[in-house]
Length: 133
Image (cartoon, rainbow, N blue to C red; front, side, top):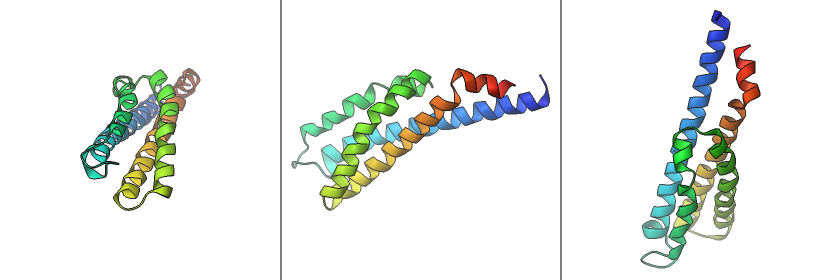
């Protein structure tokens, strides 16, 4: 293996790891934010609401994202669009602390989406062969 190929392979691997790490951190942060938001910080009803159950779909891709599975990144990037939409709607319609929470949800969902799409793109089989060439 030449030095150029080795450098390209190392760069490819580090970019994939970075994208996966960013996606993992943003997903875990989004899970924590949704729990805190609906239970304590700004619930719809005092004492919490059933809207906390919106966290359950976020738990489905967690294992695959933690292990850097490309297929999980692909379908989770579609799932996260629901959270992005909710955040955008609530940031424009709610007030006070709920607006702040919705803004954070929007930022975390956008971060996860971008990182997951980037991870899926750079780990596709054709990208691997290009990095090795």
